[in-house]
Image (tube, rainbow, N blue to C red):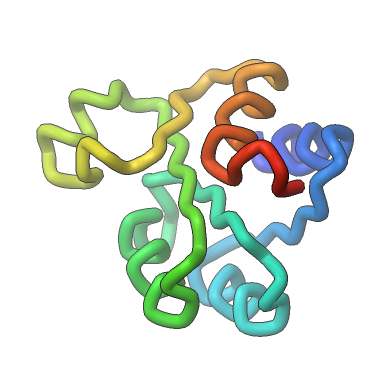
Length: 111
């Protein structure tokens, strides 16, 4: 799923750096201050996306975050994993849904 998403975002004109875990993602954010979006799954093998977003925002308070998950929004919100105001793109998603959600999170002028 990650490879398909990376390829799709690149086809849409975005510059994408991808990581295979929390530590690698945080290191990428340190070395790429131009990055303006963190797109992460909620469920991760070595942590979770919410914790990653918290750590990332300590470094970069202005960083936009978009979460994805195969679980229903109500399940992740009601279990305290996400706040109801956080941006979420449920799986599975189409390229059009991905493009629309990323555009919505970043704003129309940012790519």
